[in-house]
Image 1 (cartoon, rainbow, N blue to C red):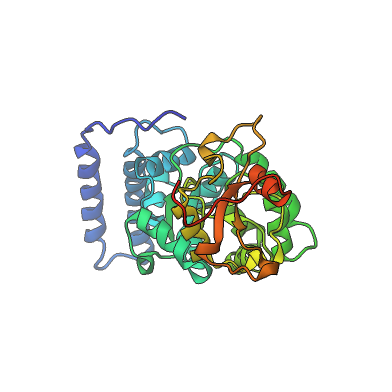
Image 2 (cartoon, helix red, strand yellow):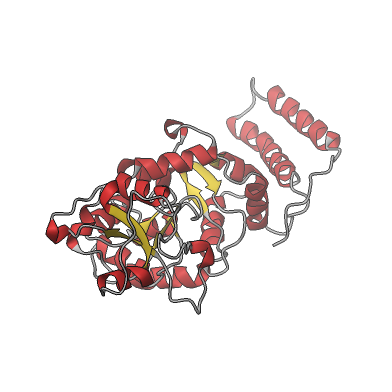
Length: 328
């Protein structure tokens, strides 16, 4: 889909004049007229007003779905009220069209409800998303919508087919989320995908947190170790659980170590910007300089960032871990 065209001024004075005449006719029936006459006098007002709303997007006249996405693309990362989408779509079933845009066409359209549920379990990620929207968290209502990504996600339709398959399995919410993330290792997935997988239950955010903090799955957000990720997404960095002692590294310590090391391997300088198919370096890990079994603590001073290749080599005795306190 091409970029939104600039709005050109259009003379709508005739439509406005017709609306005024219709409302005057309705006002004349308010006293003495039968109820049905009053209702029927509003029918043309309704149709004229709907046509006026549809005409506000002249470049997207073929369908309500096109008008909705054209409107959202004009205001990305902006809270949009559902009534606005009602006006530009011109139909009562606009919410179904929003879901089609999300599921079938790969547009990252989030709801205020999803953001509020995220805030209950991951305040940091929710506040990051709210800051990107330019609003306070408490200003977000369940009936708000926003477009979190300006470009279309071409792989979304395939992922939603997989979502439906996993959602129908007789598994708990946490197991479903893990199965979906493991099927999309290294690929950012949206909050709405995880919420749908949970059967639209609010527990999805809590289950993601448990997988990350209690079970050691390397699930990241922008604010928790992967600043390169799109706003409002999660990614399973690798299909491997952390050793039990590594699961106890607090999020603030993990992020502090990554920030200190510039989100790069302290041995070779590799970053995720250098990710290549042919390169065995795929992700960053934290290494305990003094091993946990030897009393090493989960502190910034005892942790150093390494790529997966050199982390393995350190544990194999082929490399010596860099000194966290020494600037390269």
